[in-house]
Length: 120
Image (cartoon, rainbow, N blue to C red; front, side, top):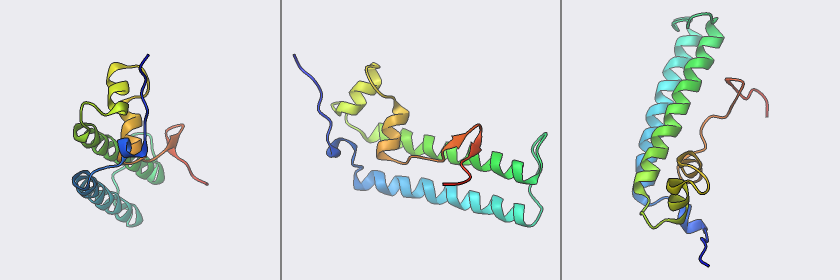
């Protein structure tokens, strides 16, 4: 019988991936800041059926979700094919690309009921 062992080295991002992730996150944070500034100036475009605060939350949730997805895609591409977590995710035995991206790249914004967690 053969099995997989997973260690911290399997999910430690390389220097190159860290630089790519930083670029992705910096741009995303810049976009989030622009939207927060628009909210503070009452210049944010309202989303259908939403007030100003709900519109901001919806925009930020979408933006932060895309950041996690982009960072995760870069993480998956950076992993070698013989990486144990990648093998398990790709073959469907355990985990997913999302799990790997959360371990290597970023956890991302957590949401409950479509809203960012307010307290805690």
